[in-house]
Image (cartoon, rainbow, N blue to C red):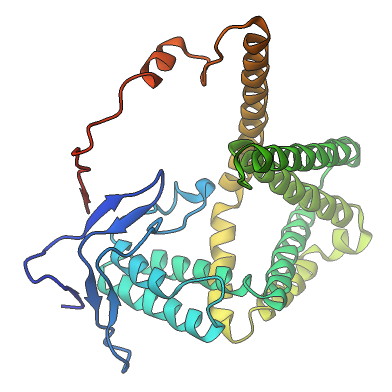
Length: 328
């Protein structure tokens, strides 16, 4: 058995909820990689907190944060960290792929997930981040070249409207996020808040659309791309894949994955931008409501829903209350 629990009586992975999206391993286990001559990889008792598999919100329709790959993800998390050497991260990624194979994760899915953690590994160094950025830009150029080959180009009139609007969104989101972080740090000594997280997502999404639309507009207006769109696309793809170096296999699968998810992710990105705008407006309305109630002498509440406000006043659970663990 590739996975063995440290407690011989355990047969299933048991997790304890410790946060909104974080877990803790109740009973640890050991993984023996048949392709690795080193010692076994151990996930200790009480390991955590962990989010299981770090999957961005806009990709959870394709890969869930839990499933057959959960054990493999936990083994991977033991070695993952911001200051871990690249050699250790690379080995952890390989162990992750092997463990997914022994967990019956479908072939293409495990290679996609391996390419994703390889991408994350590269972004942990400045040079790697430049390589990843160049790859992403190359894919955008390749897409624009391919579309121009089929006479699908972005209207310059639309571009002249879209780019200034996105520029305003980027600046506004950045300013709101900075204000939210400063207020949160002053009020609670922290550095994050819901509004700052939403603003950051909105700013990054708008910046990505800004760059993509700019590239599409430039390529579409270029005579070279109009006549040789196919060659432009192939050259851009070649440059992008070369950025992965000896990890070019991960680059190939990452490129295929982008081709598969491009249209759904574009639609989701627009939806998230709209959501972020609405969420920001509602948070602003809530804050104005609190200020108005404070000025009138009434006690402000933490929500716009009066029924939920009453629930907030309920007494806390008894001290001896236990938290039931979830089993996967």
